[in-house]
Length: 133
Image (cartoon, rainbow, N blue to C red; front, side, top):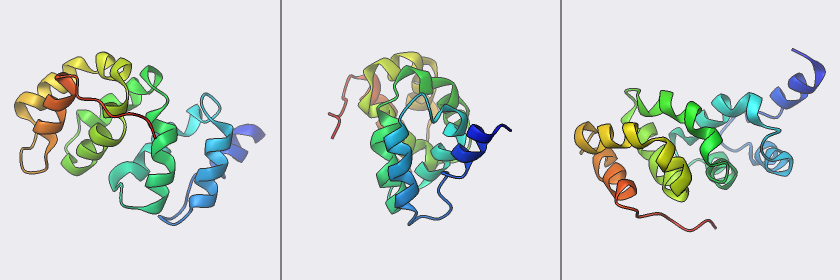
C-alpha cells in the first residue's frame, strides 16, 4: 500500500459517530475515494447511523461507477443492507439503476417482502427515483 492509499485508509470511519472522517471523504469526492468504496458501503448497513447519513449523499452521487461494488451486496443475503442500498443509493440514480437491471429484476421477483426489498426494487424499476438533497 502506498502512502496515498494509507492516508485514504486512515479516513475510513471507525465507528457510527465518526462523521468528521465522513466529511473529509466528502471533501475528497469521487474518484479519489474509489479504493475504499467497499469499506464505505459497509456503513450503509444501517442508514440510521450518523456516519451513514453523512456518507449517503457522497455514495448516492457516484452513479454507474458504483455498480460493480453494489452487485456483490445486492446478490448477498443481508436483506436489511440490500434495502438500505436500494433506498439510499440506487433510488437516487436512474443511470446506476440501469446498470443494475438484472439484480433489480431478481430482487423485485424474489427479494424479501418482510424487509421491503421486493417493493423497493419494484419502485426503482418503475422509475420512482428520489431527488438528491
